[in-house]
Image (cartoon, rainbow, N blue to C red; front, top):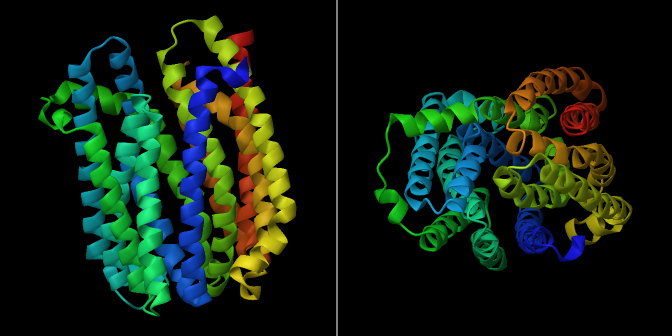
Amino acid sequence: MLAKSQSAKDTYVLFGGNVLGAFTGFVFTLIIARGLSVGDFGVFSAVNNLVAMIVALADIGISAALVTFVANFQAKNDTKNAHRYLKASLISKVVIVAFISLGLLAFAPWVSKRLLISDSYTVVYWTVVLSFGLLLWGYFSTALQAYRRFIASVSVDMIIGITRVVAVGALFLIGALSLNNSFAAFTLGTIAAALVGLILLGTSFLKADTNKQIYSRLLKFSGWVGVNRIFSAISGRLDVQMLAVFAGAEITGQYSIAQRLALFVSVLVSSFSGVMAPRLASFDNKEKEKKYIVKATLATLPIIAGVIVWIFIAGPFVKLLFGSKYLPAVPIFQMFAWSLIPFIFATTPVTAIIYSMRKPIYIGYFSFFQLAAIFTINFFLISKIGPYGPLVAYFVTNTSLALYSWFIVYRYYWR
């Protein structure tokens, strides 16, 4: 029954699409890694990492609020209010990214040299452009998931993947692939995804009237989720930025390959969480929520089994696709994957705390510990064990998150 439920079917759609999206992202990375030097690939990774941090900072929990409010209003057939929150969410995100971008441009010399390990200011300009592009892509994908239109959401993700692979592949074949052209291909993919997302979602929500109360409720709900997203965005991306600063472009490039391989694990988890969120948000019965949490937890076991298999086949896979110059990335990835297993265990309780218990403050509290632990461990271990330092930090914080979140959920539902 679990495998035939609507949740399972939606998970298959979202997971299947995300796997294809991750695959196109992997091919995109593969082509760039093959076409650029390890050092240039390290710069490319540092820019993408900073962009991901900016987009996550701009979210400040807005995506979680969007899913909650839109799913709730749609369940009541209240399209008008659903549109209001859609528009308010988009405006809020754009304003925040614009503000951050102005800061980056104002300190472009320092940002390019210290954070992006490059002497060219151009990488800062690409960071700004890609930040807006990824913001729009993520917004439309999340909005469509809030409506439980998972096929449409997956379509948006596929567009960015296919477009950038075709663009960078063409450049590689004609011998014109460079660092700047790689960024251009990525930008083209975000533009295509944003346009498709707008077509699928429609433009009627842009005409909705919004007021201070809408923004207040949106940001109030986002409060502790936002704190968690901000701290998680920083702590989850500190590895690449700190490696870039303390270890240089070469090691950053090797680590980034391992990170890209580990992305498949993140795709599994995010797909599963994306399906759980609107359902847990729409439940209004504690017993139903509890049963759903049990089923969701059982569904994580195959994900963990897949991760273990992925660990053992990583060696020959890296050598075949990326070449011998990236073989040092193999043990990095294997340790990376082991550190993510406790994070998989934490997926169900964390989603339940935010969407069914509606107590994001608990996750916000944890984020303070998470950021402090990751920064401290990275600061002391990167200089001693290089790329393995961040992996120790991930294992410690992920294990702590699993224990912490399950303790809260157990007390709430079973005691």
